[in-house]
Length: 322
Image 1 (cartoon, rainbow, N blue to C red):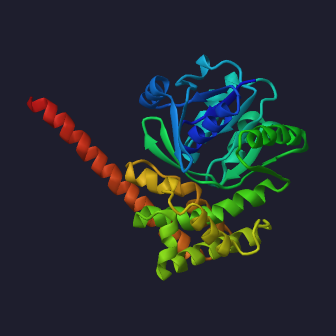
Image 2 (image 1 turned 135 degrees about the vertical axis):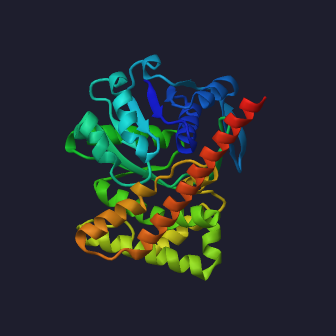
Image 3 (image 1 turned 30 degrees about the vertical axis):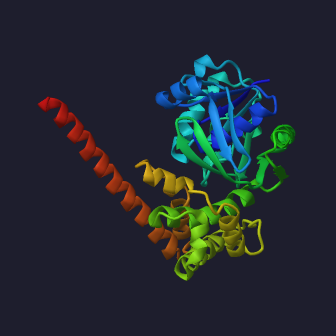
């Protein structure tokens, strides 16, 4: 059996590590050649409260080098979903399920268009992981993973992969309401991710200030109102309290959006707060806090892009003077 992990970032590496330790064969696909080279040479290392553990993994930049996959877990950034699924489709067996544990909204729809609803599984994970670079990941907090099928045909596949993940020590539960679960996670992400990215705070530090708690509350309540109008059942009776519980459970974690901002990378803001803003405006529901958070993160992205270009120009100019 070959489990394909698509994306060698923090969550993809964390899942790969646990699955390999449980005795599963795992292959990874990662577009960053430098990361592939380092992981191939040094292995995949996870730091946690239990210590440091390193495993070896087959990792490639090209899908053609992988061989046929029995299961695929998509862990790339949401803006790369369409490209990744299109590239990996040729190495999927007939009926291979593709599970997304990505942040944001809209990923399951993109996957289903490429491989069919019967082969698409939606999911979320509350595992906290920080990318330390060079194939090293810090496991910054445990949390439940929830997955579900988009159709009756794929439910058995969801049961199988749930068993695999639980067997690897990744606490995983099944759901019959994938859309509700995805929106429930989006509510939490909409509050935690942009605020940590804007203020450069760890998840737990958001609870230290009444101002950040108030902004989180407003962002979650706006998103919950959009979900309710769409007829979506949010998983938690009090999503604001759940958001604060997630902050506590992953207190030392740097959110994925903060990691992207610090590394001058594109964020997933368009698929989190941006998706809530688009849905809210289409339904005539005010979402001013989510829109402000979205615009602030996009302004930071633009500033980082400008700095990246300036640094590139300086390097080119410097070489020209030598």
